[in-house]
Image (cartoon, rainbow, N blue to C red; front, side, top):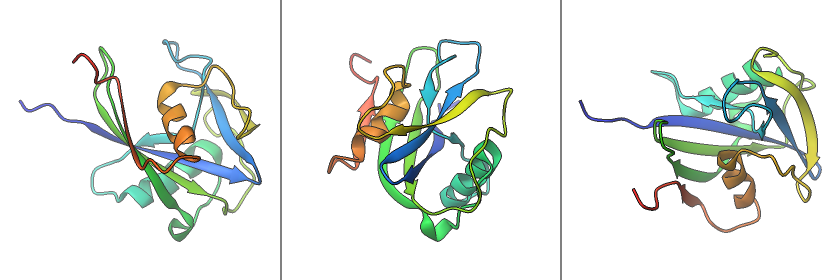
Length: 146
């Protein structure tokens, strides 16, 4: 069987100079670490539709797909995990106030200044956040030495 790569969508909700992050509840190495609202692309779904769906499912906001701007793509891998292609979208426009819709997967939501992000940020999310202030539209993580 040919190995496959998952496709993830990440949503950066930007409010003035802050970004919304969630504190992951997972029971694994990523537990109690901050990350962006995100999720996997489903079969027969466009990436914009996936981003809109994940934002609604995780933080309860409604985003017009036209308000999403794709700004970065990351190809990541790690031992024991399926390789992934991450698509990072940003928006400054949505309806509703974000709240934790998945308390079984998330301890808390919090706004962080883009200039003062938490140290315990998951590396995958950090790739997209770093790209906000960069001209780089593509990055790789975890492929060295493979």
